[in-house]
Length: 502
Image (cartoon, rainbow, N blue to C red; front, side, top):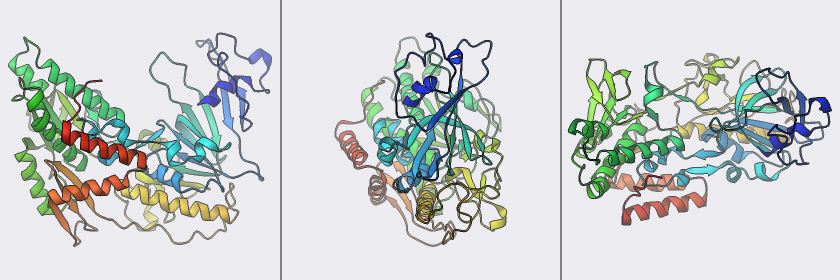
């Protein structure tokens, strides 16, 4: 975001419009490499003392490399950026986070099995051109709207807390736009979920869970705490029996069995885990694997409850049958849906509210716009079903689209409105490779069927656990993080989990 510091010093700003010396942007150092940017004043708000400027990353010129703008830094967006050829394109990423999260291992960070840095991969390592090339950038910002007619993305910078500078609004022109904004946790309109529950999709979610869990463990040991309050503080409730909810429950039960019982002996008999699911847990897995998972979780002390959450209060949840379940920690993992920004975009939609795409992942009726990952789905005219919101789907789409864009660029059609006559090649085809989930106590499930009705290898137990670990450590993006993960696993095995509340 260093380019923000120079926005108040462009030559096309009149001296009467320049910020005064109290403006925080005026006090920052200047840079001289921002020839792509322009800035023009917008109307000053009476209640705001400083002057804002509508700034932009200008359209590319015919003799310059075409620009691919990627919205999002999830599985789809990062795999796309990794595959794009920086000799063909300038690459610009706009995202509210500057890293990719390796979500399959995120649950392990909540209880100290892994450290947070092990599952976060910086964007600059995934695509080094963003840090090195003069026409490539990463902007820590949110996309607020898209003007497909003018090939422009409207953005607003991300700020932390209230004691920071106001968000800066700017625009980015694109030749090709890839929307990979992911999805949003599904709350089904249940009151209190956003206020009281913690999701498990980002590193800061895992950090919040870890701090809350350790805080409750320490508070429950304070003299004067009643038996009832101890039970509430140490009751961890997980809503959602999909892979994320089951894996977190398994990690939590391992943490209780191996670490809490040794280091919090005064309260070890009070802590418990409840997993609430409306139907069957791990519904996409083989029936035998689901039965095995149910038995193992129960043996590990996880209480399985079938029910539907009706309301969420500050210290309890209410089920549809009127049952009240007090909790100290509530983790919500009930699937995903379209995010508010996806719903607000004036683009064709697929069933379920995702952005509609054709067989080549292009957004119909607009030029040079593509969409991949959880935020996209096939339009009804393709006759294809919407793919599940899985990391392997997003990664495969990112790889396919990167290859297609490189082909378009090599044929000289990388600039805006120039790819109409280009043959795109084979359409995108997804082949499911299977599913895996760990359930704690060095046991896991491996389901290699291509579909729920299909036939294939299904394994459970200790061997599956080593397959699970081997598969995921090879999928970690960089060798640096693979080393981190391996060392964390060895350290946890020998010394136990880190229970420091930082």
